[in-house]
Length: 124
Image (tube, rainbow, N blue to C red; front, side):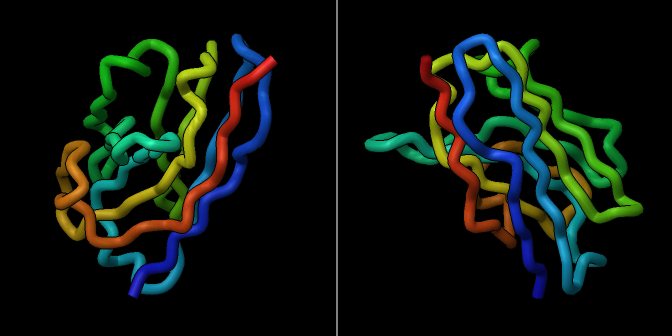
């Protein structure tokens, strides 16, 4: 079993930045590709960004491309999401997810393990 714990969420003004982290523990040898998803109130969960097992391949949703950067530190079993130029529409609960496969995109069904989420609120 893999346990994922997100941190780094909070309240930030429009145009500000936040850095989310997701620490994996347990059977981390089963975590290959990882991703960030988000869910806003009254919206379906959407894929934000994904990264392959060694960090060389990344994908971004069009809405965050150029503003968000995904990265990972496999020595620390940690996934990151640097979020810059935040907008009110980025407000959501952000979830970390891990796949047992080395490459994955941003569809829910590609992921086997999920964190509990961290709230990000962008407001003035």
